[in-house]
Image 1 (cartoon, rainbow, N blue to C red):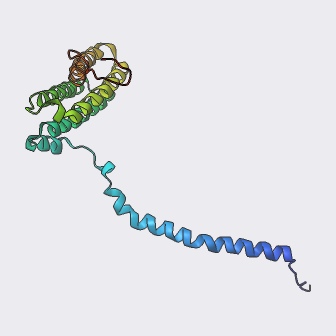
Image 2 (image 1 turned 180 degrees about the horizontal axis):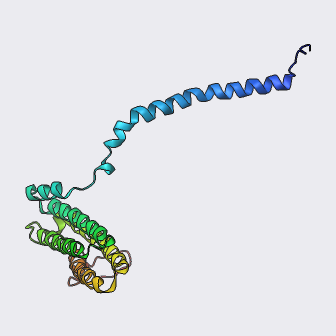
Image 3 (image 1 turned 30 degrees about the horizontal axis):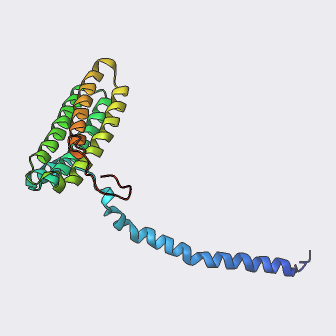
Length: 194
């Protein structure tokens, strides 16, 4: 059998050239992606979102902290950690451990509010800490309600009591942030009311 030479048409040659040029142009991009993946991995481990709160570290930082606002923020983080651990314990049907963690959560939110209230500098100085506490208590209220729905009947009463306490503290924080006893400041505005 004789070999018949194959000739490529101009269209086939143009298609081959286009395919080769696309493959070659993607090579530097693929190389860059590879090196970024290899060299960027150690930097990803150092991102702040990767550092999870640790109870021992938070407790030590709370003990060292002198600023009531910063101390309250740390206590809020510790309270959230306790609430998350309690939810995990309840999910694993460890109701005694869950109850103990919920009581520790309640203690932390009360301690956080007491730290802010005992500050001599007042609400204006630690406004952001009060705001963070209010936001955390609002979110925790939702988490407690979700947890209460997942737990069997006799055990949900303890969660409901903690949720009521959290709601009471939340109301206190709202009263501090938005005092109702003071009349609003009147000004001679463009409407002419004074």
